[in-house]
Length: 248
Length: 57
Image (tube, rainbow over all chains, first blue to last red):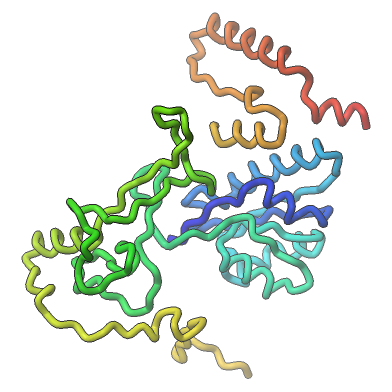
């Protein structure tokens, strides 16, 4: 699914500063499941903004709504009246939903309340991890179902680099929460970021292929990956003539 | 819960105004203790700024 994270409150407050009546619009799909922009989060954010703006002496009106999928015109039509009545829309959908709204309702600005972070999965309650970079040319069949592009820090395609030690990558990641680094105090009382290990994707691939009895896959010479399906050729588009409805 | 408390802190209303307790309907005495504890806490924090503003309006 698409993983998102709500923007810091101050950034959201600055974005909506010029508008009086704001529609806070959630999305019922990916961002609901990752607890970032569903109906519940819309309610919490709208209430918070109501209180925050009131405390600052403003009297903004915040209207709440959530559509099933903000990346499709059909679902957004349901809130067309609410959009018309608002000065601006604060979307809690991913960047796709925000752009769909701006295309569909060009007379109104739709602002992003979330940072769209990555394509991933919940690995445990409260933790989401990146799994796909949508390169458009899937190699998972060759790598035991583990993506070297999304999960190797260098997106290497020809095995681990020298920075792979004991199954861990030489790159360490700063643990983030609410868009900020998580910190701890060291022995001298200095605030330090919490650094996390990253699994070496190629170690995982090797072990998985070993389990599957397919280590021979690694001996095969693969042609250079075709990256034209990825971002290198600009924004991508799929046209399915079999599904299109020709305009009469 | 912690998330919402953090939001209340961020907007200056105070996350301490919010708390969640789990207790059964048989725990009347504990309920009374919690009510007293929260009343005391809120009294120390002072009036809700938003209500104060509304009355001021």
